[in-house]
Length: 263
Image 1 (cartoon, helix red, strand yellow):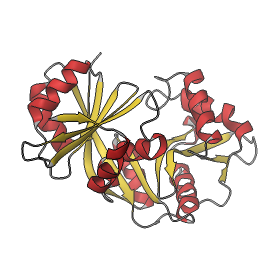
Image 2 (cartoon, helix red, strand yellow):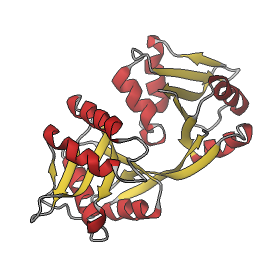
Image 3 (tube, one colour):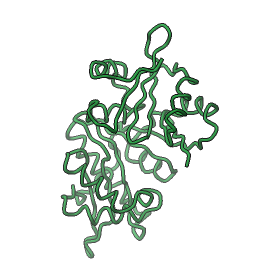
Image 4 (cartoon, one colour):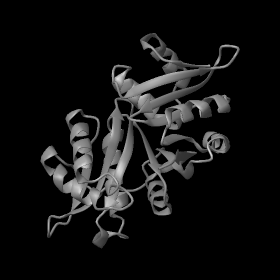
């Protein structure tokens, strides 16, 4: 049975998640940030016949995330829920997505990793700094030009997202500049922040400067700043170079992470 959450159910969801943030980051973050007051954000609880919680499901702007602490979710019921909503993208740890995939044959699967910083192992670059609002246009141009990170969103959408995060203290942007040209060499930011945690995103080095360790240095500087605020630090990564960079800085794998998507 899948029941839509009301305000009185929020604490039940948080108790079920506990400190297992890494396997449901955006359910946790969005519920903490929005509660149930945002028209674009909804949460459901799946219960077993005995009345115990099997899974938490959230939807934000049409994207669904699923979390099940014991991985005992009722698969066919969730698949029917997804079909009824005609969801175009859903996320969960890979073991859950692997079990859901046979019920959703029209979807393609992509797999990466969710990791957490356990120990800062790479020296931060002292010249990397937290960029102010007026530098966002320059940052967004670099991110929006990258095929794998920003290009699918487009400049205008990314600029709006970055500006909103900055205004709401929901994200920060660290940059490293070339000392001679003053051009941005590298960017590392956060896509979401709460007092207790942050999620890394948008780590990118300008093409002419790649392969020289600037991404690690800048990411490490960002992480040092976040650690000074006693935040747990998480990141998603999907390609071998990003995996190598994160592990070099001190991230460790929490779980394989997958998404299902269709056009």
